Length: 456
Image (cartoon, helix red, strand yellow):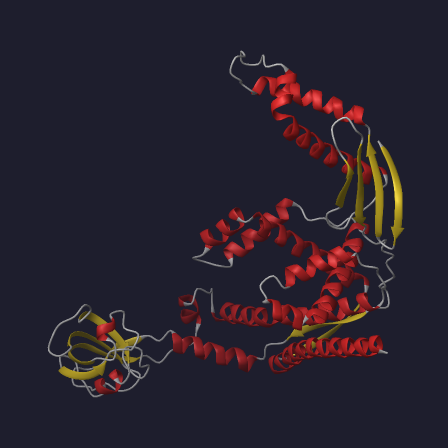
């Protein structure tokens, strides 16, 4: 095999590869012998078909198969010998190929750029420590208590008021006729929530235990049976019981009902839950602060095929006009993603960072535990989608890289409350939207300028 570098421009290298015809013939002969065991032809015993007969009937397809295999093998060998780190799939341009002749092809490869990492020592970032105020936790406790009310029986002569719980049986009629779902037993309503039918609760105010009352209501527009949608209906209700809400004591017993050890534990769980609600967004602010500094401090040449591939992934669900409209903006974003990916990966490799299969499995188990009732669905998602596990592995790898970077830079810890956190997150989200808009506008201006210059 002869290999010659024909051209090298930037990250693109074109190589000329010539494979001797003798090697191709050897591969052809080997393949014909293999096929002798597999092919059965009329007039010949199994495994005894002469190679020349097989070749006369299947020669072209066998040659194509052999050449294809040689291309794969020699391409891999050339890249290894030349120590080329390829970005994306190499392109092969066949110059000469026919039986009895050398195989001559050109191999076009876009190489990954050499990354020279600069020191991160002077980088700074802010880590946000969210402080949940006691009054916020107390408000949340009251909200939980209100959502988990306990009720006690009213006296038989006491009338129902808003907030009471009514238990009743009903029989409904439309134009005097029964219908599917026209009867209900032991239905419970908390008056004032209006969860049954619009205006239904108001008509039950003032009823007592053992009362019978006829109510007017209109069936919903989205009723499963179209012929019953928006139909005026009469409900005959037999009141089985009227209960009033108990005054909820927010104490250790209440905490145990909510699955906590005691009230202190419940408050701690609430604080963790509320912190978790904001932590991801606040971590994103810190992450962007670090990534912006890394991107600005490095210059990296990017392979065009990787840019094209990233744009294709980003815009795969967009219509053609949308792709064209945001073409320059998408290219800029694609370049930023690829650049950061290369820089972070280089940092990870230099520090021998890896993510084991056990770490991926442990993370999947965490997700399963965090989604009670949906464990089977989460597990099946990863079992049926190997790409999902690979994506998770990539996320864990990036997390490890960023954690190590954080340990090497100056992190300023800042304590904030919920109001400050919400303001920061809103500003961060708005800033990202504005950045995307400005990129798009800037790209449009650049395009306009280039048109003017070309006219001149």
